[in-house]
Image: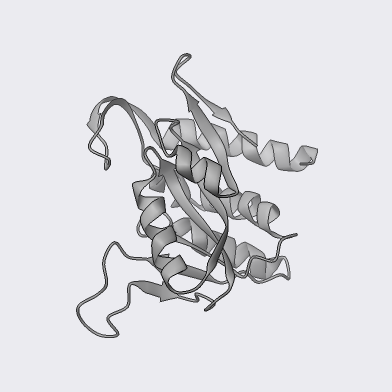
Amino acid sequence: MDASQKDEVQRLLEIVKKESFITGDFVLSSGAKSTYYFDGKMTSLTPEGAYLLGKILFNLLKDTDIQAIGGPTIGADPIVAAVAVISYLEGKSIPAFLVRGEQKEHGTQKRIEGHLPRGGKVAIVDDAMTKGGSLRGAIEAVEAEGCTVAKVIAMVDRREGAEDLRQNYDFVAIFSYDASSGELLPSL
């Protein structure tokens, strides 16, 4: 990672701390209780946050043979769109797809929307990972379609489980939460 990429990660951390990281009493999607909450959409839906996420993730993927990026809706939606736009601007298009929690019961009845390359190599991303349930569900859905998950990415890894994802996939987090210090730290 060069100096400008490190600067992008540092700037994104500033935005995340300001926009997405809140303290209080929360129940997470995993059902666990927490004294802090990370709402990644509050970063990924800002112009600068989306741009930085797109750039950082594109730089992670540009020298790979990954054919598309997707993840569980709704946390991944703005992230994969940002990567798709940045990849186009950089001259190496990486199409995007979204994975619903369940298959639609109307219209095309799809569980996966967008550009999933059948039998291709893909990256799966989410805004946060606690126990990995949302990421795991998206991985299972794309693997059922014959794709290979070549990389798994979390904007923030809460480090509260999901060891199987870290061990069985090429996993990377942009930031990790250090429970002992209560700090969000760069992981790249």
